[in-house]
Length: 108
Image (tube, rainbow, N blue to C red; front, side, top):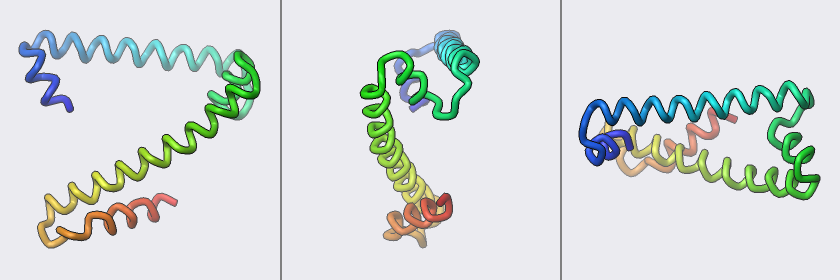
């Protein structure tokens, strides 16, 4: 949470420095993936890069891990959305799971 990090760091300059460092790391990651995409112009993204680097088994494990991780993160975000809606609209309290489920169904 940004508020928790800001409370721990203290000063405004340090917060801006951390945001800048995070931006540099994100840009480095994006540029690295752009280079990989140029080197291996195949469909599949990370699967292809891992397959070419470490072999089919590592790429297969990555694919299965992403299936589990992405599903869990979508479910967590849906529950968070339901809780947020319940905070904003008190009449929706008790329906947090249903709101989350409805948001997932809208995305499908």
